[in-house]
Amino acid sequence: MAEGILKVGVVGAGSWGTALAQAVARAGHRALVLSRRNDVVEDINRHHRNHAYLGNRVLLDGVTATREGTEMGSCDLIILAVPAQATRSTLVSLVREFDAPLVLTAKGFEAASLKLQSDIVGECAPGAEVVVLSGPSFAADVAKGSPTAVTLAAGNADALDRASRALASASFRPYGSDDIIGVQAAGALKNVYALAAGAVEGAGLGLSARSALIARAMAELARLIAALGGKPATVNSLAGMGDLVLSCTSEQSRNYRFGLALGRGHKPDEIRAMGIGLAEGVFTAPAALQLAKNHLVDAPLVEAVNLVLMGRIDIGAVVDMLMTRPLKQEG
Image 1 (cartoon, rainbow, N blue to C red):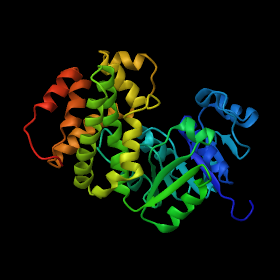
Image 2: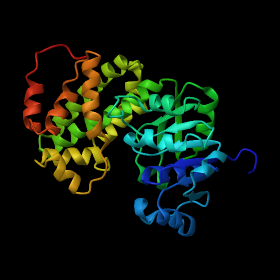
Image 3: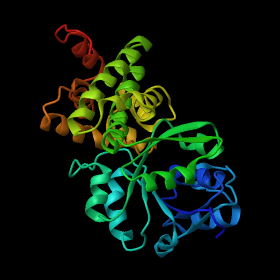
Image 4: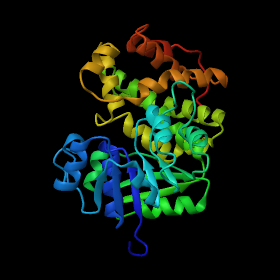
């Protein structure tokens, strides 16, 4: 390996993992994607495509794939691109295979334990230096090379520098942060608010209602971030406002699409059968509600999303409920 060229392992060959592998290759480094599927590995290595997740998008020459977890041991950096609820099991299976900084990309609390993704790493791979990647980004845009800016949060300057070098290019711009907790909380909670925003749109309640919801979500998000130990100012960052607005306004967001279907009267089980894909907010909503209760945080939007998901109220009634809350100053 030539000096300065990093070998980056990407655990997870879905659309997001493959897109980040593209970003690594576009930055001039080598990306080795770990997949459980023989067909995906062959498609990437032989045809420079991942048809299963990114259609006919051509992958850069620096992207290759493997099924062997042991190959992660030779990597300078590991990007974990699996769903939030699979982080623990993935780490347990890989913890002996790498000794490199670990970039976390999943946006969600662990449903069973209410833990942040970095807390799971602390339990399963306590020696790993953690970097958190979050911010307004869609896999299709990153894979194509559309201009994208994200937040990378870390407590270790060397790990942050290595992750930044591995990903930074003319089309992918990481901005550094030291608020690991706040960045993770913002990434997890924005999925819950995206469900609500989609439901407002699906119910035909208007753009004014959706805009009001996003603004109130920012205030609620700041309260929750602070309660969890993060910095309230993170709500104004790419990982906060940037990701929240994108996820609450675009049908590329699976959470927003799930919310659209909720607003149109479909039940969660029906929506899952539609093939929308994984909507992390569905798992995060009850965890977020419990965390809000544990920390005595007023979180009416999180509470409302849970009521809608449980089928106990429709989105129109939720908006009526929010509009008739006691009058107070904005904040």
